[in-house]
Image (cartoon, rainbow, N blue to C red; front, side):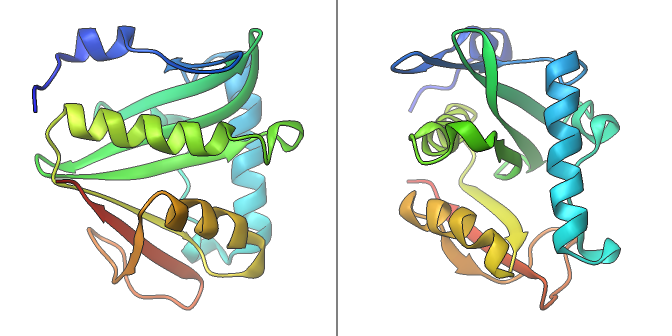
Length: 170
């Protein structure tokens, strides 16, 4: 499978009807607002030691590729891919605005992130999400995309508040 340069990757677009997924700047005003909602949700659902969501500074890490989904120019979802090492990446910051849920936007974002991981020749993509009922839709989304439950990876420790999932890329 051919890899693409980061410059080519930034130009890569994923279309789902009227939704466009592309690289974006997490410092944009609407993106910062959605990131704040994402962080607030995670802090409402998990104790502080188990909130692993990236804040704005974390999104700006050179190891993080940040993407947004926009419908007719309106921000409807965000997602990021963080390089853990040259073979392994992590899905981060997945959040879809409530009005766009159950319309395939989140699945399109997951598929886009996996496609980016494949283009970078990663062998594995993993993620950490919450274990409470509030995260059940996310876990279902990831399972539907082929992710399976796994143990902690990277610097994560086992926790009753976290569920870890992974996808091996062929």
